[in-house]
Length: 124
Image (tube, rainbow, N blue to C red; front, side, top):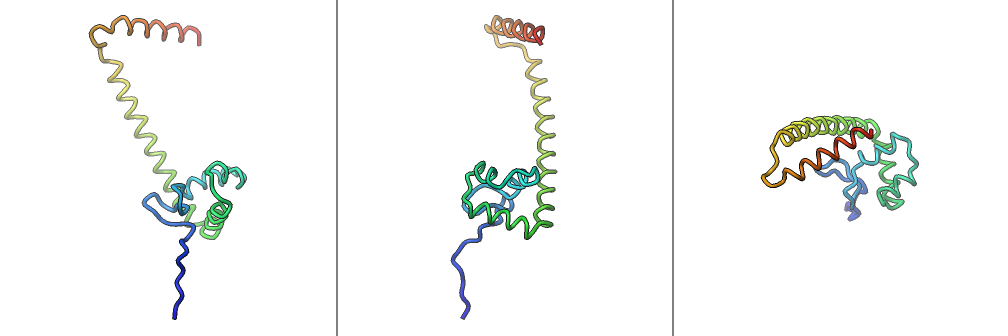
């Protein structure tokens, strides 16, 4: 007869990737701080993890270093692509908004805003 464990694994795979069970914290979140050489106690406090959760995350990362590192690099690349996309989209949006004429009756507010921007530019 085979015994089965009802105990949930401390690291699970979700649609977000490798995640610490019972949290929304991915191992990639933890990896950001591990690669920056933050102490485990700091990381644990930052994410409000238990000591068992932190130890499980660090052990999993260490035992599966190549796999976790490869996935982490993919996550970093996706994050960079997302950032570039949104920066470009925001630039386009702000350009369109800047070209819009003020709504009727708000000309005085826009004049005041332009005056404050000009004053700020002179001070910098």
